[in-house]
Length: 307
Length: 326
Image 1 (cartoon, rainbow over the protein chains, first blue to last red):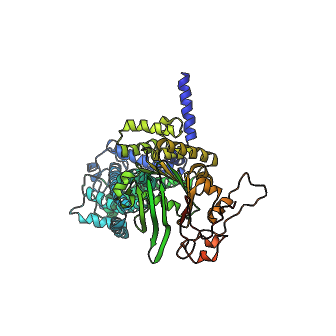
Image 2: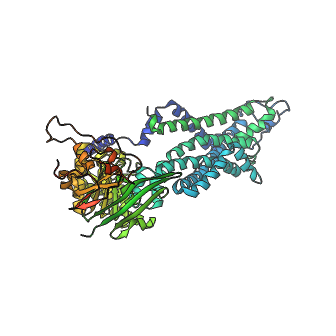
Image 3: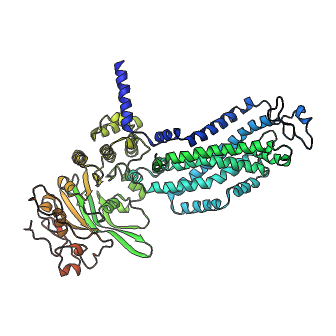
């Protein structure tokens, strides 16, 4: 018994003397940061709703109800009533259920687009930063061209290339927008790693080139890119919504999507502004959540920003 | 004894577009016998670190021209391909750097950094490599080595980090170790321990050691032969006792006189060397040290002094300090 206690005691003292790692230090700072907490709460609620949407939504996204359809007039769309807390939409579907279900699409598209963009960006950035020379020049000039085009315009162009708009084209279009940002960021920090003492030291030990790049350079260079990914999640959600709004989004009527809901609500702004109001607020709040968390993450991981 | 390493007429020039080359090392030659400890001494910018990097072939390929020859066991390292050189680094020749914190990978535990080298050059499997790594850490005096294998560099003290770096450098028992100011970033008490450790390990493994330092105290305690560099050239080379006893080159003489000594009569002033190292080396038609030299004569600013060897001492000076001085 006493040995266990002694061991545990010893470990604790050792841990304290050993100091904290940068990551745990960052998390400690994040937990005390009200901005980060707000962002995390918004994202947490959003993710829970998205995950549970099929369970908590009372109705399907495509289901139309006679009770709502009967009251549809050119000048009026039925508001909140028994069984339909937010009322119906222009086709007599349950607006509340559609709002909940749409969160799923937003999360899916946002996360997938960011992850795909991140992976491609990491590959390009690593190649450019590790090899330098003409590989770097070619990759970075292509990146520059992509960066020169405004992000939404780029996404629209990519989405318009597809024969018919679908969820996949939206994901790819939004991912393409993220690639140059990640690639350029990673290339920069890979370059600074290349001349760092520990990379030279690893080279001086005869470590093979791929191992130097993947084990010694990349893990030390990737921090800023991960932070950027949180921020990019917010813009990815906004871009995806914008594409849907412009009619380049998911054409499947069986799925609800905030951007498309917003677009369709335009014609009924004078009749029932709530149809536009709720999706708009949802998009703004979720994007804000990711931005807040991303910004505080960046601050927390910045060694100069210790408070 | 046949030398292990022969550096012959090594020149390193940094090229910049539209500007004349900056010569950092200008025809340096020296030998190292197996098991021998030699020193390369000089102030900042004299080319001692560049010499080390050139021997290890760690200088960037672009914009740097390295000529001369660096033979390790008769093989010219400068003629090897990059992949052949990678095979040798860490196995045949290895290097310990100045700053132990920045020279260790901050995101990888110490243990992995030791086993990585063992796996690379000895093809050791995971478990035997871990065992060997723990033994190495124990050998360099890191307490509780098994547990320390999992520690990150920032969790160790400066001395421990330098011990770990030395363990990594010596993991594959290289025959040549280059130590580039290994004690500069440490406090004085730790410096002595690290030097003692290096001395022991070199004796134990039979490795040759090139000690690069600006600290004459380090040289006095460790090196058999001392090369004094100034402006990219060796200006004086002698056995340690002869160099410290009767320094002949005015630069060496000045360096030794600028160190406080306990046995000096109290009230004696320390003598500083005037000025500082100039960037481009005026060796062409003069002695680079002439502008700062207290013994400079007309000849010094008109003719390049040649390296002359007599009685085991190399000297590059027109007007050396008389042997009877001091």
